[in-house]
Image 1 (spheres, rainbow, N blue to C red):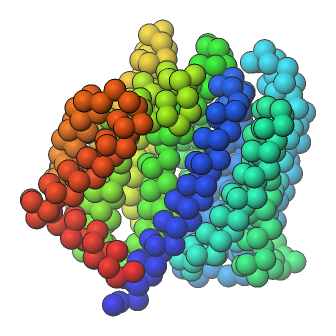
Image 2 (image 1 turned 90 degrees about the vertical axis):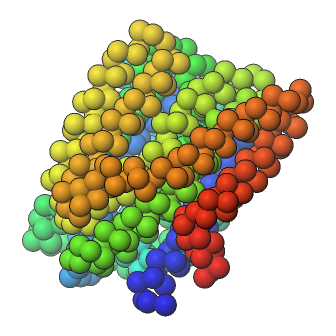
Length: 476
């Protein structure tokens, strides 16, 4: 097996282990805590999401990907980025600390003052580990990151559950979040064994920032756009409604964002190694695309089909409205891994300028859709995310076609088998659940039916995607 293929398979395996084991633990913890806490508690945390997310994007400033993309990176580069991250983290913490009363006043929720000051500690803590993560990603060493993330999730989760049971309410969520970041950072320092030099190079900073600044601008646009829904809902609707939306959003993101994260972390360093060979790059790119769709499409359509029994069984009926929002958001998030692969290609080619241009176009369209749907209510706003996601697909594939001749229609042709299998599977699953009154039976039989149908149809049609998927598992 070639060195590149070995790295890819190992990277996929351990990135999957980290993402799905950690997120699996966090999922269980979230379910337990959601059964104890109120939707309004999650609503308050959701109100702060955009401020923390923007600050976190500023801390990284695109330097992680700049380090990964750069071929002749040095210890001076690493140390320069490290000290920059810490400085930005400290500055942003104090900005949020002193602006917390204004945030609380904006939402007319006094509790947000203290919550902001506690959650903002994440900024400084995470700034200490940006370089460690980048170094491990360059080595395609996701096993080490998996160990750190898994341990942090368990420790912080136990503390969060105990606090929730003992009546700390929303503070249990805040402490869990900060403790997770702290434990993860400490373990990354221990495992990576990287120590910064006592040096800061302005020349190195300038070179890295030339590439990273475009990604920073793109990242800020994406972060603001992804969190603008929480601002609008938190301002226009009750905190309970925001709680419903954040839970639906989290469930829809669970399979989609985790796989997207795996794809971004694995494909970027792998494709960067063959960035100068367009033919080889296009072949690897299309294989990643097909395999990603084959895995994510059935997960998302299947989740939409069993949304009501899923929510009612896991979170109890006080969260039932979440199921409707979840069904809609699944059809928006199912395209995110496809977006990620297209955008990764631009970074691999060093075209962060095109990356930024695409983000501007997409976000303008997305904001227009949001503006149109706000007066129509929360459900209409969720439908709008599907329109925006499909528009993003058209935009994202444009430059992929220009750079390696794999445009929209080639990609749709590659994606069509998995899309057909997944949509028909969802219909079969939904009709099957209608035969039963008990919601637990609906959920269990729906899941089993979906798995059997998807695999049988794939086998019957001699799906190349199924062969690639089984080959990936067999090799590891």
